Amino acid sequence: MPLRKRVTLILLLVLSPWLFYLIVANSVIATPVLGMSMVLVAVDHAWSLGIFDPAMGGDPVLFQHLFWFYSHPAVYIMILPAMGVVSEVVCTFSHNPPASYRAIAVSSLGIAFIGFLTWGHHMFVAGMSTFDVGAFGFLSMFTAIFSAIKVFTWTATLRHGAVRVTTPMLYFFGFMFLFVFGGMTGVALATSSLDIHWHDTYFVVAHFHFIMVGGTLTMYLAALHYWFPKMFGRMYPRGWSIVAATAVILGFIFTFTPQFLLGNAGMPRRYWSYPAEYQWLHILSTAGASILAMGLALNFAYLLWALFRGPRAERNPWGSRSYEWLVPTPPPPHNFDEPLVIRRGPYDYHLPE
Ligand SMILES: [Cu+2]
Image 1: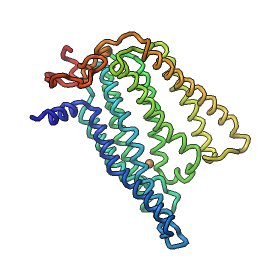
Image 2: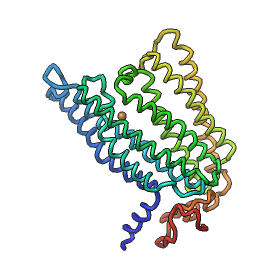
Image 3: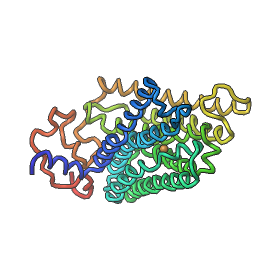
């Protein structure tokens, strides 16, 4: 078998490459639509073609359709890699194979596919037929089903495992709480009667951040702390990293939970002035944002220190079975000097290392 083909097969044994293939597929299909929309806007302005101008017979809602056809999958382009990281981190630190490899891989395909059929949930108040609103709402809820399959599989992976609470694992627990909460508010937003009440309020802002920061940023930080020893050959201070992770997760909750309450009470987004009764929730949110910022700054500070002064890392400090930990630390330019001979799967925790 040619080497490249063999490398691809090895990659597909590990869960996270599934997610990375899907990001690429989403990018290739969705992003050109944004590019084409931009070209249409440009030529519309330059030559007054009236594509989006209602005064000339055009349709501004068409632009919204084109924009959201890209922008909904764009969220998945950001969160799918985070889900790949979850799948690796949870196996390594519970010293267990995934409860169902197939469930994670297939639900990932489901999320990536259904992401192209749900863009209309951003436009329930833009003037849509009742059928369209119902169909987009119904299809959007499938995202929650596929996500729930993942969440249950990750939770089941912890069962009977030797769970170690490390910094990546702390971010994982934060992720699970925030992603589930963000996902459930997503199901609520896909229900048109509720969405019409919450449209363009802080509720949407809070939901979006629960997915994009609570779901994505937490796992990007987990990835950084998980692979840092391999990438740079240095360890970071464990105590400081736990303080920073706690500040990031709690700061995040204090920032965005008040925004759900604000939005539900009618506070619109993008307004700088508001009635006095909203003030205390805004103050709470700002205080939370300050804690979150301090947590992120702390992350930056000790990782920068560890880059130059951290103690030397071992080849496989977490005892992972995944193949990237077989290369020396930090990895040489070609990772493996000879083709890798695989004698066990990347999640075979019952076999000795
Ligand atoms: Cu969307």
